Length: 142
Image (tube, rainbow, N blue to C red; front, side, top):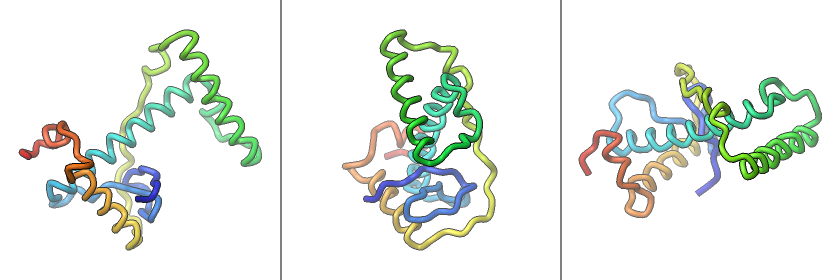
């Protein structure tokens, strides 16, 4: 399976951007897929929120070349990991972790994106890719 960016409904779906199924008449497999994609997106948002609260340069657009922006972001990650190893967890950094979703907007989707999302859905519901708690948390009897 391909690498993807996990996004919300505000983004158009394509081969490398996964967004959840629309919340109308979902099958249990689609509900599990939405749950797993949303959980992944929340982890990424919280992780970036923690990183941005520690290194304030990430609170605004970085007005430098792409190569320099890569170096700045990598430096923030290395410094963040160093500080965590040295000082442990600082809970002040994780207090703001916004999880609100942007309301859905009509966006176009690609056929390849739909096929990729269906592949993830099938994997999340297969014995190889399922986790025991996904059924309980989605109110599904397995």
